[in-house]
Image (cartoon, rainbow, N blue to C red):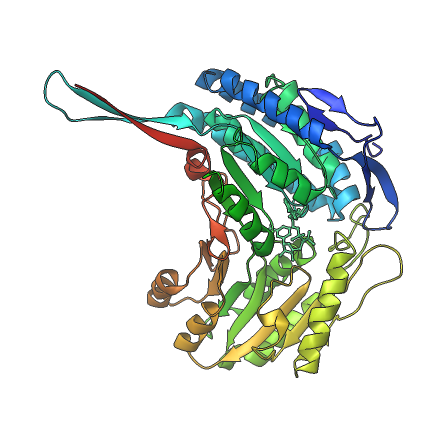
Amino acid sequence: MTYPALSMIIDGERVAGGGRRTHSVRNPATGETLAELPLADAADLDRALEVAQRGFRIWRVSTPHQRAAVLQGAARLMLERQEDLARVATLEQGKPIAEARIEVLMNVGLFNFYAGEVFRLYGRVLVRPAGQRSTVTKEPVGPVAAFAPWNFPLGNPGRKLGAPIAAGCSVILKAAEETPASALGVLQCLLDAGLPNEVAQAVFGVPDEVSRHLLGSPIIRKLSFTGSTVVGKHLAKLAADDCKRTTMELGGHGPVLVFGDVDIDAVLDTAVAHKYRNAGQVCVSPTRFIVHDSIYDRFREGFASRARAIVVGDGLATGTGMGPMANPRRPDAIERLIGDARDRGATLHTGGERIGNRGFFYTPSVLSDVPTDAAIMNEEPFGPVALINPFADEAAMIAEANRLPYGLAAYAWTNDARRQRRLAAEIESGMIGINTTMIGGADSPFGGVKWSGHGSEDGPEGVDACLVTKAVHEG
Ligand code: NAD
């Protein structure tokens, strides 16, 4: 399987060429160009909007059976195409192919879950005097503009497409220009499963141009965005100008509280693997390890020795534990953040350097005793670096967990049941894993609080986010 030719998909048609500007898609393991991606001009975006308006008229009156058949059919096709989809994702994003295969399975699970959920978009009948009738119904919100980033090239588009389609909306997807073929592969599964061409489309472009154009149109009734907090705030303001509904899945700075009563090796085996998954380019990545004094030295040393043992290489090569970073901006950012932390007195235990001069590789890194004023303690690093600091008691650990304006994912390890409940209640976060890193699932809401955004994807909440409520009162 070679890397495919790239296009947009507008009204079911593969759109490319025609003198459009292009973006070079690169393999992060080599830095080489894989293909040229056509970028939308204003006429392309206007056409996609007009088609999305028609698509909404078609799909809002589709039956649950039609929606379920499309979602289940697409899930089946994704499984059949798993190897090709995963290979393309690794080629353009860099992650080990085993991780890309899991993304396909996540989409399959989500689409099958939504296929059941479409039969449960219930309303209510209110109690009223005889002769009167009041009902509350749920209706699809309208055409959705969805923006998906590059870190989960298959999973993010799956989320952005699945929920609107289950709810009866049409959707225009702008996936990241860095990972377009994966997004197109997911959309193609839906179209091949019988989704009408007008219902879901894919455009690419200069991000700010596309978002201003789509969000500036009254046709779009909802914005769904995954990406950084700074871009999210900008898009939320654009959406507010037209009172559009929003789901914002933004940055995080995952705190991990580790208490003295745990099996340190078992925690490290799980936590280290979770830290370096996708080279740390994960919004729910564990970042600040807030460790009790009593186990601090052993935890830090065990973390560094496991990080040193990770095999870094091409995601397609057998035995690779961590691939390159997805684009040249990431190693630059990590280098800057680690340099700043060391200048301020942090200790580097391992990593802290680029690997080779091809591709965008960076070593798994561990910093300890990182001062609170270091940039990396405040900015989402989005890379393969763990920050480990000691704390004397539970109150100080909770205070550190809640110090930042982010609140996406948090983790804690302790065997004390009362403490587990206190942590669950007191940590400000959309998702909390206690003695586990498994904080998601097709049936579970995924989303954050504070600067990590609002609204949820996945679970019944993911579909509900694409529905509006209508109350009808009959006298
Ligand atoms: P970025 O903030 O410029 O872009 C993040 C994503 O938003 C990309 O997919 C990009 O195409 C998109 N984007 C940027 N400007 C946009 C606009 N005006 N309209 C629509 N989409 C726009 O930076 P980046 O270098 O790609 O990533 C850097 C940071 O983004 C990371 O450090 C991380 O904090 C965050 N990020 C978060 C997630 C996540 O899953 N929440 C995913 C990717 C990146």
